[in-house]
Length: 355
Image (cartoon, rainbow, N blue to C red; front, top):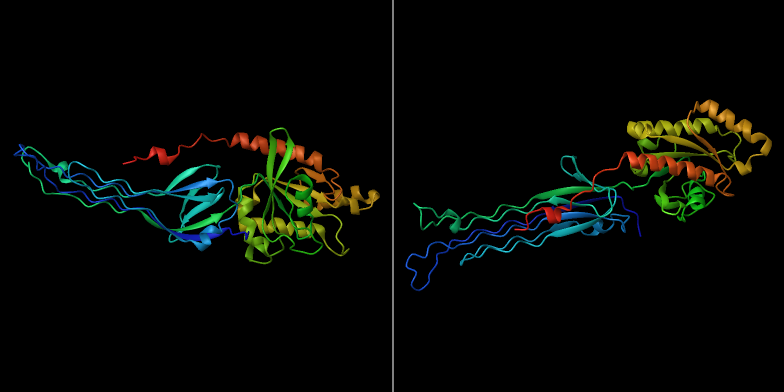
């Protein structure tokens, strides 16, 4: 399935039904009085976060969604039926924005979370509502209220605990294959990864976290160079960034430290908040570095980068050092999850007035 992380849709909640003007006509009831019922409310439009979806491709082919209007009120004190609601299934991590103003309206962050993106209009009043001591035969009624109509932009930011970033061919895809259940395409040429890949890392019984592998970044990515800029948004959801660095480039003239600094600079230019996220170094492909040179190369790189955080020396191909790194990463993710815990949300489909 094609990975689509952006779409535009038009939605309309249902209009409310009109109230009814009616009078009771029954034998032996000379002054029956008004009995026109209210109109029914229009259908609402809901969005639900479906954990089984990972793309917005369905909304590329179907852009218009209209809920049913409420039925009109009727005589004999009968109210109109409410219009049928619509529930749109969206991937977890979808950001819903007003396409005209750019205002962020909703975010679907929790599997099963339900939000109301357009509320149906209330039904109009029938003439029975206007009966009073001085107006015993009212002929007033009100039309139904219009439902909300919106032009929306849907933007998917994948929900992953850990994001892998680095230059093309740094070994990110090999790493996510080594530590998770993801099986991305792996080859010996740049930009093998063309869209984000998610993998679940199992640390132990009921202990896991989600890692995202994104297309490689190059200098100028924030301005549109390469492929990575298209997917930088997906790093904004992560709790921790693992900066994967290739310690054994084929070209001896490559300045590894300069490349690493360029990646960090791209993050800062794209989003300062993304740049401020915790970032750890993962020095990969050490199996291709002579044993007697490893310590010197690592020490020199860390010194040039002036890096103060955790540094992991691994080989994704042989899985050397991966297990120890995964355990430390899990502890960090777990601590952040605990700090970010929020109260359980209420499903608006049951909270809203059904009438």
